[in-house]
Image (cartoon, rainbow, N blue to C red; front, side, top):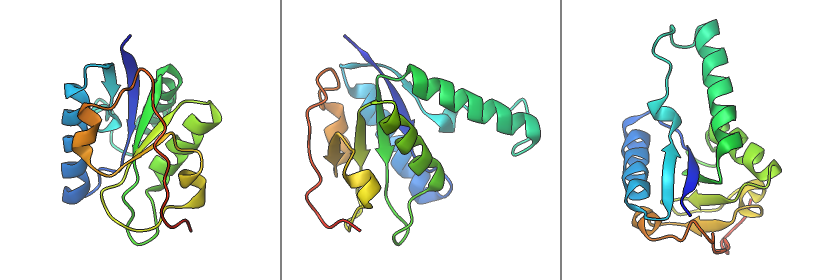
Length: 147
């Protein structure tokens, strides 16, 4: 069975774009996955960015994609101790809907309690996404520092 994945990740600067592109490629290589929805690739260019129509289309499209997802992959590399608020919202929404969340965090350091506790798996190497078993979503707990 192939799973549908929603990829939650910031993509506002070169470092974040590089990271999310590497995650997208790793997910594409995983044989247990079918469709991968990456909001970065669904920007509703038919509307003026950040205009009223764009806001509605982006929000509704992302919520629909999360609702259709079997699993979420969330990139939570912080800037200081601040995670991207959009990613945090997507993570919380998925957790509330009992959708497994696979966290990817390349940077070292503590994890916020509200992400460290409900996550299904904690991954620090993007390449591990190529072989992660999304059919069974094995648990990989976060055992580091929580804030």
